[in-house]
Image (tube, rainbow, N blue to C red; front, side, top):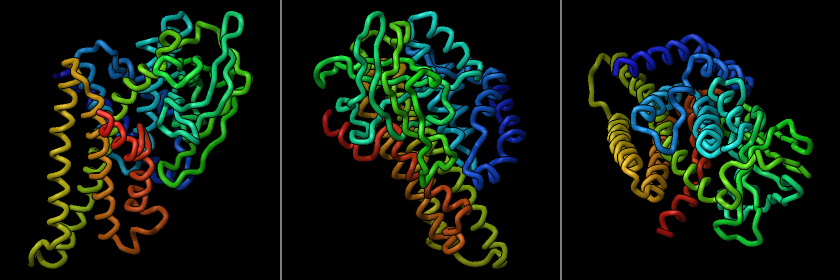
Length: 371
């Protein structure tokens, strides 16, 4: 456990020196230096210790969890979101399922932080219902030609490559879709930034593929396995999202508790804490239950149990808990909380955006309803 402690201390040093001093200015500019921050994490060996292998032991996962909880215990949620999509979505898919020399090259550079990769599955008309996507990949000679468009893609504007889910079969069956590693610099790839209400760093975007040619070296997994691989990836992402939402909620609850304590001190320490303090206590109870749920889901995953249902329920509960904390913050700060750059308004916006990542609340209920 000493190595894990040293890892956490090194990460704390990075956050204190390279991240916290810049957050407020980055938030106001709606632009984080994501590529520089990813590169810094890679140079420190963070990704080498944290990227998840399908057959991994719990020790690597402990590093991953520390990383995400510390990134989320910040006044802004965008860095954790970007790291999650690079590390636990794009890199994880390439590392576990890319079989070619090309995939190995990308894996090594993504671990070093010199390349950034993300998953591109969702589309504007279908959202997270991946069985209805319209992007196609048609075999042509020794490769494929991709056509279509992806929507609300995390890291789109900063990514060097996309793990693209495309239709390769005639229908909507489980085995009618395939994943491809598509370099962002490929001819026919274009990216448009999306102006979002929450997670405002200019990294979310729409990606279009027009006659994009890739070789069979660019396959992630094998033809027809795109949906099973993506669904397994969603399970990892939803578990990580629950951790991040819980940690970010704790940051803001601790902030609010500090304000309440200052209020009492100004009043001479007299009087009952009041209903708002009682509500804060209730939030802490809900977040502690979430911690137990996260531990349970993690144990199930490493036991090899089916976790699609538990992690969907976990992500749903984490989202609802975070929204409740955000509402309490807004109530406490009142008009001040409505200010454009207040920490309460930022948390409110980021929670709304984060609730869409990995599938909306409605999609989590759909997953649970099908079980």
